[in-house]
Image (cartoon, rainbow, N blue to C red; front, side, top):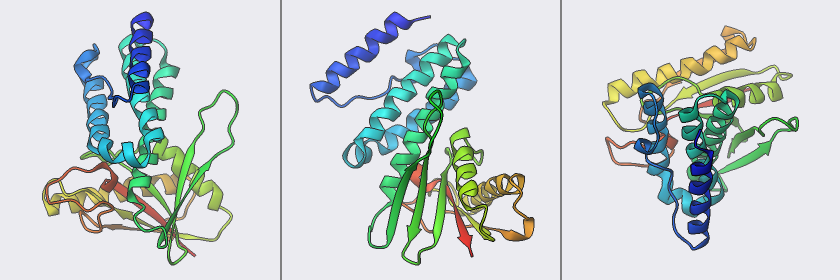
Length: 247
């Protein structure tokens, strides 16, 4: 264990932040991690850095939570014995990042309103933040985010979907799922990846008892970006799926 070293690291970062310095998560090579774990955390590290400059202006609170949670996640993976802390730090990181992505994608408040709802939880549980977007047509959507070149849902994304479906399960609704990507890679590859992302979300809906005939999916590829970027550009806020209710 390295709790004393970690306590020193975090306290020094806090003091530097108090002095007005921009604080970043530790680089991956700071930690002694297995290759597979290091790759996962490295991807998350790169996602955070790619939106750092925007987030520090638009959502500094969530950015601070993402930085501290990423360091916590890496530290706990290095120690590798408190699995409950690993899961908590990892989920806290993804929740903070999802919160940031949603703030970045709200461009026009008159056309799109983002509601952040903190669910009631037990004392020993982590609050689950659910982001629900309502567009100008009053259509309700749930936005889910993915890692780069990945169609696998994180536990936070799954819980977000569960909460969204639970809230709307009493409605006789149909759903359409739009898969999206950023502009990194070819248009053909991104179209296929966007369909895979939509299919991953569809599987969750099916598992929750939604009838197959009530679910439609559509891959949008790198079209309809949430954040406009040049071609061949990574941006985590564009790697998403949107679940829309069709009443």
